[in-house]
Length: 304
Image (cartoon, rainbow, N blue to C red; front, top):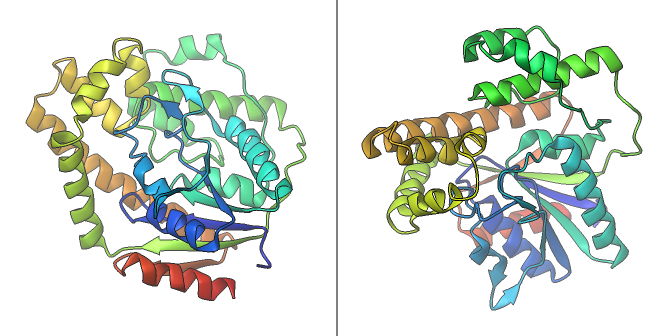
């Protein structure tokens, strides 16, 4: 293998994790690094779709990294991901094994492949106070005045929008510090499914998580230790289920609004990946509707 890294990306419900773990099992010496901005949190299992059973292939456990590494309620970010990724990546290479980066958070993936130079951004209490009473639309308009590397399309709460503005104000005032994060040569494989199949998978998976995996109970349990605003901050499942548990949405309203939000999120993920291609990345797309064995063979063909 000429590449130091294999990257498998795709929208939600595309089957990318299954492909990554089956590929790792076939190679025999590979480990998976997760590129999912929410699977880092312990206890947030059903809503983030960790599907840890996927990491057991033929009764063998596929080693994984950057899953369950911090507590629910914390604010994990791009800066921390870069640092954690390189620790895991260097560790895997040091043991003469192969790293597979797998996930759907396009910004995280692009940041490590391209070697973005970022730094930790402190909170700005004065700025937060000024923006506290702004509507979400007003916050998005303010954010639109800044050129940013951050994916702002899924900033669906005022708290997240204020944080994004805070980051951009900091960079405008201070610039960025140089960091020794080199670009990484990676074979990039995208798992693509047509729009209708993707929508069906998303809807079926949502119903399964609600009816069979007790996703509402997971949110109720988290609310015992995590403030509601912090869960809402994570968006998607945790936003809408928290609003339901708090009595602000009926069950049917929650399901309907959440389903729409996940469909929109998957569309934005694909928009990011297509943008990566315009920014110079070569993504080899495989058909996500094929049996997983055929998808693995397709990736092996690229590696050869």
